[in-house]
Length: 205
Length: 208
Image 1 (spheres, each protein chain N blue to C red):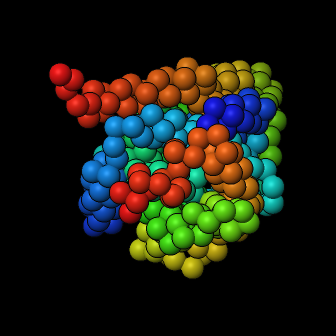
Image 2 (cartoon, rainbow over the protein chains, first blue to last red; image 1 turned 30 degrees about the vertical axis):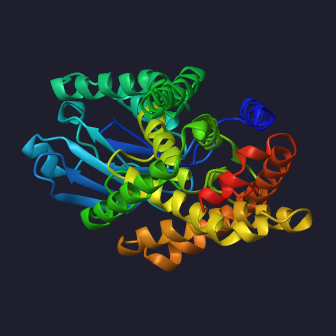
């Protein structure tokens, strides 16, 4: 028995924890559109997962779609969500009983500029954001800058700057269970069995 | 094979929970004091086993080890799997709390069924036992995949597609678990035959 356990523990240590029992979803607002990232683990993306975007308050389905080969799905912030001011509830169904959801708070997109959706299959979000800010900087030389112009430039620059932080946050969510959880769980099992043993033991005379 | 929260309908969740309660009750009634530690060790093995991935084939799947629990514990596999799944859902966020009943039944029932059907084979010495243990390990995984597909039959995905995907992903797991079960059973038979429920003896007979 002990050797079986040792083999298990060893196999656990050598195998990288890629988790197919949980599906991860992460969404953020980038320049007027919402980007949804879906993955099973750091390297394994959800391809062709079904996405449903709902109003977080009323539960009404606003739009649907499927993720691309990189597990990404982009959509412009729906008009209805802007007017109603409630957040978006994004539901991911990845098949075989895998499902997860993410809520985008209304505050995240209400400040974002209303832009026509850029190329939907832009492979790198950074380059897209970079080009947007570049174009706006060039335009800022023109006198008569309105408040919304400035807001747009700042929003685009912030999106570009915050992208690495968002990535960091996202990857934290993808972390599998650590040693603490594993050891803790085993401790719980033995503790519970201890309780069972106490109640099952016959009183000694 | 952990079904997530919010996928299944209330009727299936209730049915799964009821069946798991029955199985666990039978398991606890047949469990006696001397075997509690075996149950604990195997529940821990099941708890950790889900973290081990088999990267063979198109889809990677993780070990389940339900066949091993069935072969060694018999009906007591129900409480062991239930406890391990609860902790997995609380600590690892695998599956969901309301789905525990369905998930536990899907994994424990095939294991117990394999144990009951294969016990004549397992209690014979030599090659028969090896074959029995391999089948117990492999068929329990196949049964779990089948039951999971059945649970998903009333969702958008439908039974056939879910069953096809689950079976394909779990073929390597079946082979590995068959081998693990053979190794564990033959090792235990050599060093601690009294741990094995099916082994000949007064204890094995009493639990029949």
